[in-house]
Image 1 (cartoon, rainbow, N blue to C red):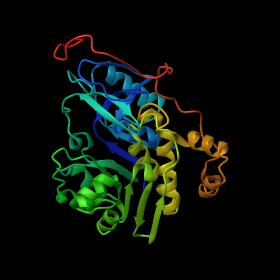
Image 2 (tube, helix red, strand yellow):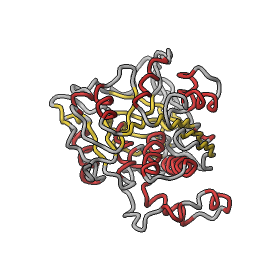
Image 3 (cartoon, rainbow, N blue to C red):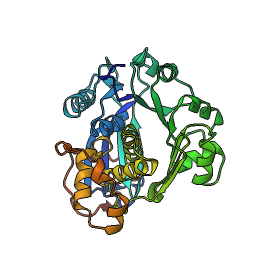
Length: 354
């Protein structure tokens, strides 16, 4: 077996994210709201890639970049700054990198995206996927051929799933869990797909379909079952002030994979993922908010709360001797005071800017 094989294999759609923070409320037609902060950087599948790479995992990403400023910038950040392998990725002539504006509102965010379907499918990018220890995937209604190939070659599949805009929540999607080692949906998705009314009930149903089932619960933490070891874990979220929740679920997933590759007990894996996600929401953006070993080590060394010191005491033995340099944050504007709402200066049906 090749020791240089990727530890994490990824494919999916990449975005250039512009995140606005400090909003007290969403804007209404004809209104301009000034924000207290702004950050930018790669998003989408890049969230997982950067989060994994910052934990020292050899990460290979198959995605599409537009032949524009946004695509070139994201390539530079991922390959040069973050050390992500882009040999499976392609640049598409005449295609624009999708751009998302994220409005951070409390513990959640609203997204507005401009973009088109990429000219290369996941299967075209992957071909015969390289042998990898794990793959982090986003399940979609239409199964991807590369996923079955990767699973057949021994790659452990860690999957999540997104919001169903049709709200049909087809249970047929769960058939793909037969290929997966772990499934990590959020509470709302898990309950919808399993037709249950609580995270714990959803977890029970999912545990019959996949060896490792995890349900994230936002501010209530996460629950998980590992059928291979017989472990159950229920951990609370960290008490943190949320600046920007963009990509927190991706940071959770990548962190859970990192801890799983280390062979940690389930409770430690879950606490570690909750911690990493909690640290990420205190910074702008998705990808570049990932804490990496440096961020986790800094948190642990500064921790004084005795209860948290006990709960996370395993970090004393799990943290590597070399946690690396401080990670590059998203380029941001400095806080400019509270958000200010301006009254409309034109009728609501008249655009203020072209």
